[in-house]
Every structure is written in C-alpha cells, then in structure tokens.
Image: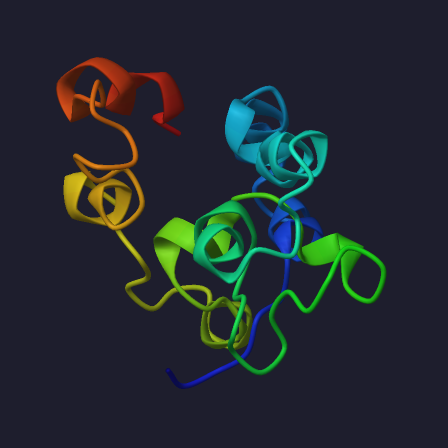
Length: 122
C-alpha cells in the first residue's frame, strides 16, 4: 500500500471545499448506517463503510478509531500521507473503478456511475 492514512481532517487543511461537500454526502455517514443496523463490526461491511479497515492505521472499531468511520477521501483517492508530504505530485484520481470496488452489482444493484458520480465531483 505504501504510506499511511491521514484521515479526512488532514485533507480538510488544504481542501476545505471538498471536505464540506463530502460531509453533506451519505459517504460521510456510512458507518452510521451500519451502526443503525447493528453491523458496525461485520467484516463484510466495514471494508466499504470505513477508511482502511483491515490495514495498519485504518478503522479498527467505532470505539478505538471513530475518526476512521465513513467513506473518506482516502477510500477513493488512496492513502494520503505521500500527498501530504509532496502535495504537487500526481495523486489519486478517483473514477468509476474506485466506486465500483464497493458499489458492486450485488451490493448496489441500482448504482450507475453516470448518475451518481456527478454528485460527488470536487
């Protein structure tokens, strides 16, 4: 994987507009949807509803790493520490492939990138 997770708050320092847009999306509340269903510890769910579950520095559980809850910047754009260290370097263009890693036909049968993608453009 290379690098380490920084979390959405670190991204906010330089990308405040994108952060504000993200906070108003269901992605920001993705862990809460699991919690409401009692599935916040389900391994088959947390990989998509949190940041970095199963990876060093990623989501462990809602008590230990609440700041890693939700689908965050790095969930789609990749680990952020290298970008923080070198902000001018090419970094994590997200597109349909990023979305489809979680929005599969099985889990999100109505997902259509051409419809939903524009809602998160930043």
